[in-house]
Image (cartoon, rainbow over all chains, first blue to last red; front, side, top):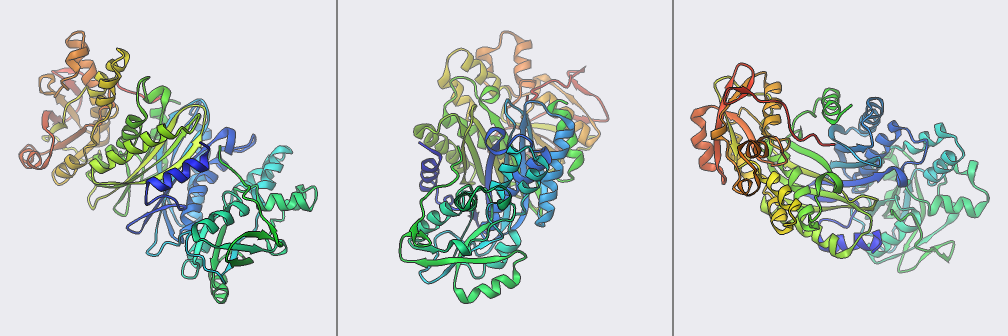
Length: 290
Length: 290
């Protein structure tokens, strides 16, 4: 059973699961576990790890259109080094402050591989699910895609400073709140744009026609992309970008843009069925957490 | 830096940390990470692991005198086996139901060692801290101690059925709520009675005189204890029992008992300084999570 099958099984077993985060009486809760071997390339600082691990959970809160309130982290490493732990906590605290949430501590443990489990909490009276997209809506993306793909290239190239900077993304809490009154469906792009579209399509029983020219590509992608195909892959299938992908009526886009601190790009339309990029089927390829 | 030093460092850095759980605007949140090599002896079923991992976090909610609302878990294992995952979820759901909380899902991941990170949420208007014990109060313990020590012996002896039963403890949410209006200080006994007394003493700037005859010992301890010294060790220093250790005025014990579904034993008195068992110094020995 791969992780996606397991997650589907989890969602089927638990009514509150199956979206970016669970919502219980207006309280939003989400948890993630990250490991050094799969999530933190060589060169990732503990500051970046603290920032990014907490940010990944905060991104799930953003995807529900909720305000972020608090986050905790459980930190496990082969040794509990004082400077590393301090750096991790600084990163965790800083990303919480960036989205008006409070970092309220956590658990510590020793283990063979550096592992972080984070939980973020939020609040909303009207969570935005993955399931409400309507034919005729437009599909939008916040910010720009390909940032993490570029970061991975930077780490590979030994440019850890750039890699760390690219890995410290800001969770789209403010944009999620701006989109919440208008969006009909929303999720984050942690598995890449292609997979996000497939997941929104499945949950909402719709399709998407997306234009590649309209997809916002992060400036750092051009530093590393070999050609246009590589550029497209970095922006659509590498994933782990933590932007928001959402649907909303076209006439609501201006209002949402006015309140969002980052750009909101219309990348295509909600259609009856099929998921196409420039008219060609867009495969359900992307980051599978394994 | 060992884990206790690291936890003290964490508590110093973060105002909301340093107790069994953090409390933010009445919302209680706590997180824990457990690993197969240190927390789940050979023979532990995935049902027990799900139950116990979530229960450990719920116990921290109980220790604040709070009602439990929800829990999540991040599950990582070398392979995502369907039957194992189902059993884990069943255990997690069942322990939540036992304390009127909702299990609301989690995250899945593959990793080299079976690892679980759990987060539990609760609510309280008046959290009970570790710091309020007064000289003249009595110190009490819920239920009986040594259950986990007996469980470890059972697993060692190859009696996995008994081991699993002993490992499926009920978090003391109901007793915590019964004690909350009366308790001046409270924590759970996850590090053992001896260490809990030292931690309460440090937080409250008091001491304790405890009588061994008054300490409630779990019935299963007698099955495995070699002699009285071993029996005492199993009940006071092995830890991981997740009972509540609290202080309260002597004249409030009857009211607390009336509302607690499990027994509440007075084991000693709060004194000016020193931590003694039958008049002898009780060393700060116990379970150190490493």
